[in-house]
Image 1 (cartoon, rainbow, N blue to C red):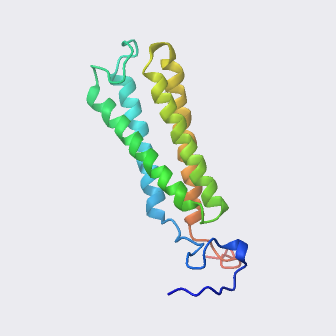
Image 2: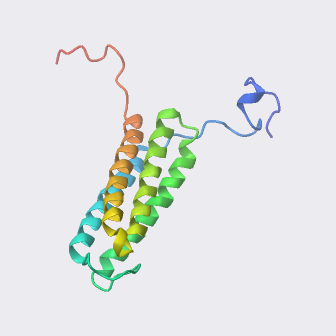
Image 3: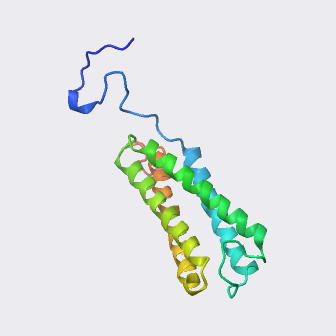
Length: 161
């Protein structure tokens, strides 16, 4: 049973039984997302090679269908993962929240580019937006990973080895 008395100010917590500090997002999660983004980028390049750019409008092309579907599915999974990281990062500090937000925005930009690329007049703009979104997402999640790296205490490294 939780106690209704707390040393924290009332404005700092929504309910006395709810902890305001979520456990830190592990390094492995950030690395997995970064690897997923790298794989997504590689699949996007494979789609550029396998799927003809002059094809008709449509969500799924006839040529290169398998790579295209895997590319889209991985992008969707990364988007869901980024949203979950964003929701969990909310209570892990400003820098972690910043990295999660930038990563999520980058993946949303990439998804928007993917939707544009389905229509021939917007195909080049969609490809460019997917590329930019991938870079933004990668560096956003890299911020989150860098925040999880162990910090060296001041004075531990005096330069003599």
